[in-house]
Length: 124
Image: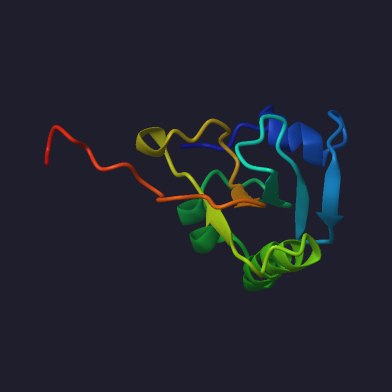
């Protein structure tokens, strides 16, 4: 899938759309999700045109990959989520329900989150 420079995260990175910023450095931008699914729900996006984790880890320079993942950890610490815990999630493609074609990691926290996936009762 080719990168769409008109996606909402690209516009946020360019400053065309505002966000409630949590953290920013040369590698990443973190901001509050506009439709939070937990008391704390922050998105962390790399500063570059990467559609997915597969695209990012294959094509981004090593310093960006390292800096991006360090930013995810920094955001979790700054939001004081390390204890009692948090969840990170990155969707990839149609089956995962990826809504924006720009790599982003969700950080969820602030409450007991429960199981990640619900077992399909039809399959037993």
